[in-house]
Length: 248
Image (cartoon, rainbow, N blue to C red):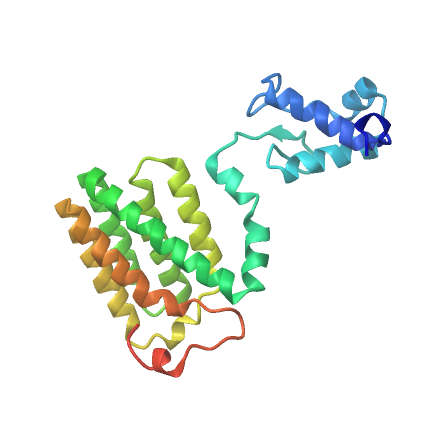
């Protein structure tokens, strides 16, 4: 169809309001931490009703640009790598829940990602970072037998390794992948004796980072993740008998 003869699509009022408010944020007229104009002010400024303003605000919130609190003005959010990635959290979980292939791809991506992160950590880790990793390992040991707390400490351990890079995008991606995988972790209660293996491997990882040996650190991380990858399955799926009855 010739562009000149294409029909003109009439936009919803809320779309127009959304576009103008988004432009105010993008140009810096409204900055992180600023209160958005009140509903009444926006209604008068744009000559539209309250429903159009509220729909536009909800759209901004859905994009991670503003935060809406009951009884308070919406506030412009500071855009971070974490807040951007958080926008795809629900779609990612829905994608994973519907496909075993997607879950396998995520597990592969995590291994690919973490082998790079561990090399960064081995080069950049300070004594303070090593101390933090040991504190997290001690927390895991203290939560031995408490499945939820043990998993939480495990995630924090890997997230700490990502933060050592000093790159907030790496840390955000790591946190997202760990969160998505957590939804598909099999019951920790079947881990008779396996927690000890995880703790021993985490100790091995810390020692490699402390020595600054990137090759060794990568090697032990790959071994650790390949061992545990079978523990992540889609809901309703059971571990293979050979996996469920042996140390992972």
